[in-house]
Length: 474
Ligand SMILES: Cc1ncc(COP(=O)(O)O)c(C=O)c1O
Image 1 (tube, rainbow, N blue to C red):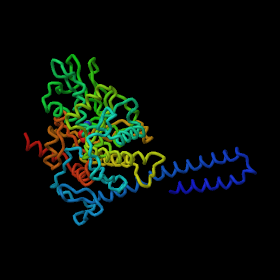
Image 2 (image 1 turned 90 degrees about the horizontal axis):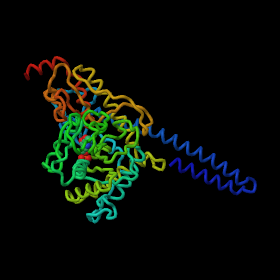
Image 3 (image 1 turned 180 degrees about the horizontal axis):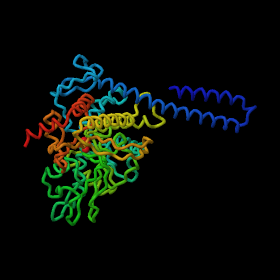
Image 4 (image 1 turned 90 degrees about the vertical axis):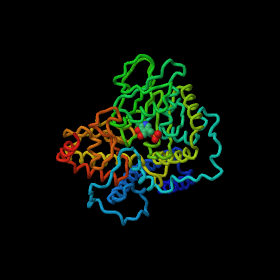
């Protein structure tokens, strides 16, 4: 608002000056106008940056003040201004009697609720009873059930963040990237092959890949395990997840043989998790709102596909599977993406929207610091280290701060999942990811209450507890 007022004042001044045109030449006005515009633009940029820092500080302060309150229910309700505080205690006095079950098995991104709640009504959309009724969104588009506004906002966000090339790509929308993953397997497998196409991924791999691949016992494709051990001739599909779920590593294909078909799963290639080094431009790339903005319940993902025939086959799969994808969800997602992009573009009004990636990046940074400190205090665990690299989007260097912690139990504990379960911390055992049970995957995306309680409990686990555990489970 201040900028607009300033601009009006400048325009008024120039028009007044125009009346003196007899005294000044046109060149004088142009030079003066240029100088004023440069001054105005630098002020807008300066104030925008300042605003971002202030806003993040305010949001973080609010978040930590609220996280200082621990709800004692096992499944805390979403934070809301009207949540009664009678059941709460302050963080300095968190009393962990060790009885509450902390469930960090799923990567449910409820951590982001607080941010979107702070944004108030800016992301609210109203869909009337008569809207979104047709099956069709855009009959001229190869993916006819893709809402044009959602497509527009996907392209806009990728351009702003710089994490993927979108020119000359087809966009296919899916009910979560889970549906798109299956559509990709269908589209990349030859229909008349004598045996199913092998599907591989380097261990530790995302635990859903084997089960989703083999769920329907398809004759087209079959899970073939760890890509590092794959040595069969002929075509294959390799799933490259980067940053990787569960261990956060940055990945490249490992098989590298003729007949390769790559699916790049970029669920976590966003600046809150990892530095954005360059726009990805692979043949088939999967993204999801679940981990980008935290809206897992919308069940929306998108694929960027280079090859037209592959995009057509993926569209056919979704056509036969669910006859398209919810229009209501796409409209809601379009709004969410638009609000994020608006907050990063000079034309946006930053007072009403928010710097989502700055906020979520800071939050993940805080959480990783807290986790590393708890691990150090305990002495029973270890975590992967991540090299620092430059993020073109945030304009700073940092090491990955993944959505999951790949935690290893030291001190002779053979089954880390069981050990933590004994202390009422639920995680996902390493064996689900094709790895050793000495590892577990821990979600870093839960609400503050769970996360804070988790780090508190973890820091209190010491060698004596590990010995008790080993004695009890021969
Ligand atoms: C690597 C990876 N891909 C895909 C998904 C699924 O995403 P969606 O919720 O869009 O189905 C997840 C969810 O945890 C994931 O970790």
